[in-house]
Length: 62
Image (tube, rainbow, N blue to C red; front, side):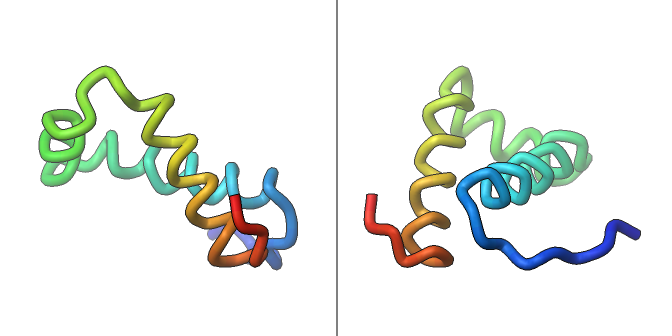
């Protein structure tokens, strides 16, 4: 198990989001659902998620 760390920077958020979607893309139940919806727009989707969590967790409105 990976030790938990306080999320305090944008790099921390990127690591969290990337780790989550890495698991989603390997999951037999979720990968097709996400890939069908997002298709080739993964970079755009990830950027949106980074900004969303940056606003929520760091209270930095982007």
